[in-house]
Image (cartoon, rainbow, N blue to C red; front, side):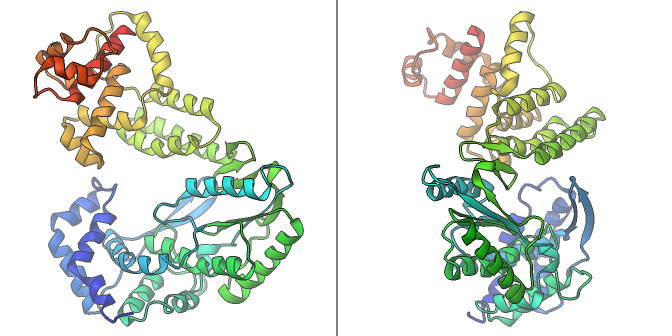
Amino acid sequence: MSESLFRKLCSYKNLERAFQKARKRKTLRSYVIEFEKDLRNNLLKLQKELLNNTYKPKPLETFILRDPKTRKISKSDFRDRVIHHALCNLIEPIFDKTFIFDSYANRKLKGTLKAVQRVDYFKRKVSKNNTRTCYVLKADIKYYFETVDHEILISIIKKKIKDKGVINLIKIILSNYKTKIENRGMPLGNLTSQFFANLYLNELDQFAKQKLKAKYYIRYVDDFIILHHSRKTLKEYQSKIDDFLREKLNLELHPDKSRILKLNNGISFLGYRIFYYHRLIRRKNINKFERKFKKLKQLHKEKKINREIAMESLEGWLAFISHANAYKYKRDVVKRFNKYFPIESYIKIKNPKKHENFIKKSRTNNVQFSSLKTLQLLRNGLNVKEIAKRRDLKESTIWTHFVRLIEHNQLLVFEIIPKKRVYKILSKIKNETYYLREIKERLNDESITFDEISCVLAYIKFKKY
């Protein structure tokens, strides 16, 4: 590896890109706004500290989460997070190409859903489409983040990185977290910890694939599973893996969470309970969400948060349960959300009974959360371009949200299109089955867009309902 790697890490261009990544989805946080006020000087200051070997991270902010599992989360200062991104920008591509395909945590085009889908694929292969018994070694590593050995990690990194400046920076980042045993452990919550966690256990991945020849092996951070038709073979794998972890990585399997199960009885993996023909949400995950939902309700009632913030908190959960056999539960969650976090109505209700029946239907699942976030920003006075920029979406997507909202009585077409234009479009539509191009040709007005026509059609559908 070229000695210029550290210089590339310290370049203003790389630091600026690191800042953009560090601020993602946190643009309204006070510490981001403060850093961005004097962005160039702040980045140049970091650059100078790195080049002069005077960079020293600020102490980690530590807090305890109980959900219900107790976890210690350590949060780095924002300026240090910029450094973490700057480091990962350069070294992650170098190591990622050495990772196995079935390592799914914190990697592009991977993630929990891809891992679960891979399990579905493997279970069909191993069980020959459920015609023979299939077993699963489900395991994780005991106190993984607290026990990662710094010296072993550095030795792994040195296989690819020879630049002393980069190695010294990694040592500084690792030493900022203190545990009971010196030179051990990484903080939960840091970007570098997520990357190093993958890198450290890539050694296990290579052992499982190259030495054990485990064909159906999947890992997500420190959780991993191996599928096989032979229980005896899986027992051998478990024993050999435990020996490898102890001897090579100074780790050990969790004795209570590492066992061999029958696939037909269901396996717990990444928040789901996976069976051959279906997938359920684990009860403890549901309980965790319900506690969070209750807390959000209380904060909203006390006017400490608005609907938009509540939506952002629940959006990930909606996406997660969408991939399980939980249609009724998802419908209930959306129904409760709309009940406790209502949108202020701008519509005069002419037919209360009709409106009531429509709400019963639409509040279940017809208006997706993404559309509601768009509506919230519109209510805050933003136009289409501004909403698209804020949400990092195409303008056409925002118009699609408007169409959905109008059709389901969440937005008046007159709020986004002038009345004259609405009536002009309406005059050329005889029924809702007209094609957009057909309406456009009848209008003979280049200033009226297909998006506007779609919104008026949505308005007709709502009125007809």
